[in-house]
Length: 127
Image 1 (cartoon, one colour):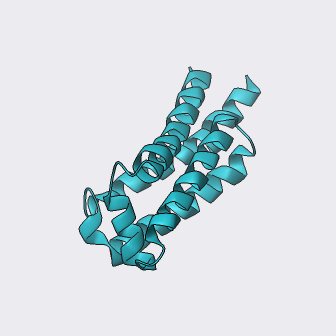
Image 2 (cartoon, one colour):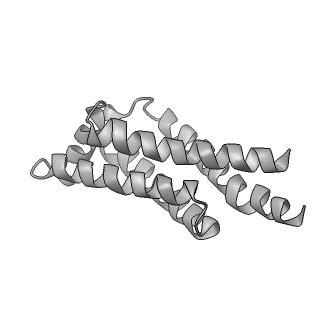
């Protein structure tokens, strides 16, 4: 059961990064992502920066899927997800899908990341 949860969380987390990177940012299917980048970083290179962020998200998704350095990558994810969401809340709240509720969903996502790397994975190694 624990191994199944570990695998499910890993696939879910990786898929979130892959979809956000490819569909939302690189393919530009969710324009508010670029609007958030423009609001926070300026309009000059917002399109290019949005694509770069998308590429980096895809790379992160692949690393998670391959289960490389899970604990380090988990800490990295939690830091960037919370930093990104706090910046968006403070500077670009009008572009957020769920407004202030985004912080709650980001926290739940971070909890999943934590459980995946620090709870389920160690238990799976013991079995």
